Length: 64
Image (tube, rainbow, N blue to C red; front, top):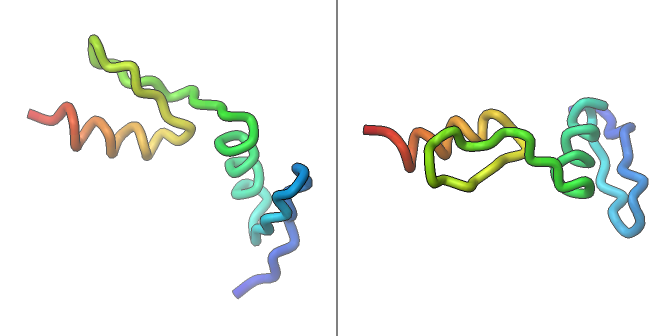
């Protein structure tokens, strides 16, 4: 396994990652609470930080 050289610098976190993009995803979803992927179904107010989580939600709750 690779070295975890990307560390989160938010106070009290310190979580480390092998890949820089994983650190960015961590910061956006956990610390910044960004959820840009909104469910397109009428009446559903769910939104997600990751597109794959939206796809999973749609498959579970909105599949026919």
